[in-house]
Image (cartoon, rainbow, N blue to C red):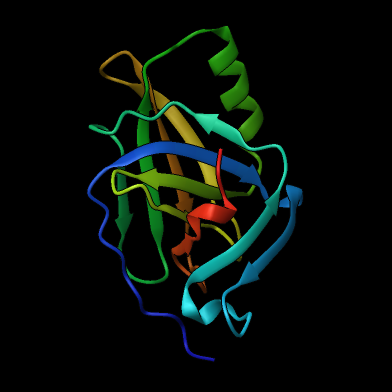
Length: 148
């Protein structure tokens, strides 16, 4: 099976969620129900975690169809944020985001993305979600099947 070589252009990322891969009940792909087409028809999930997202400082880098990195700055540094980030650094996640064009996308469906964070020079946390060697890169999610 060949690797998918489709790319999307993202102008802005408005909202950002992560989902532990263990909390995915079902993912259904459009038409032939295979992931090669890049569109998720149904996403049955639980326990989404929303991360603060600053669209001016949030970037998705797709180095090739195998390596994806999304980074953002969380400016609200407090005990709750620090505790949450500490609890997330050992997991594997599906990363879900809403673009300025009001389209939902995700990555990490196959192996899951890892989360790291560090103190940024602008008094915030720089959070990085990284998936290396992804077999399937970015999927678009049908909006009417994935509403918050």
